[in-house]
Image (cartoon, rainbow, N blue to C red; front, side, top):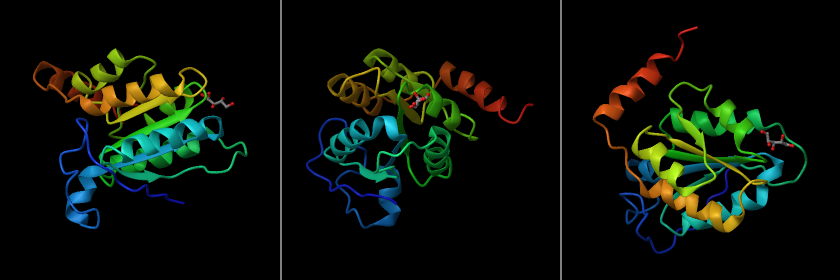
Length: 177
Ligand code: RB5
């Protein structure tokens, strides 16, 4: 089940087309961000969803919404496939530590996902590693820090140059076994 959050006034970390009409499919693809978690991170995921929607992102929240135990690989893969396909520009995934769901997401071709518990790392995985997904541990970081980490991630831009060569080397490893 996909839950869409209403958009509010964009701020400094808005996506490039945040002022576009939400029902324009040609534009909203680049504004779309997928959120997913396992049962251990539902409240934090929902807080992140509201936070990024208020910045102008179109949030595709693929759940879960009920607290029954659910395996994190299932939701990590589902979110990753929406990013890898281009349906969503970026993704934020969460589990208890952020580690398991990150590992699952990184198995999907085209995904570069890092777990972050600090804002510096969140900025750097965008600037140097061109990460297209962020993972958070709901049992590791509190909501306040988590939202700052999200802002650092969304506010950063890939620097390219020598970093592009290194990211290409990561990509070349895909399917190498
Ligand atoms: C669930 O108990 C827990 O294992 C999961 O949320 C995550 O921390 C795994 O990496």
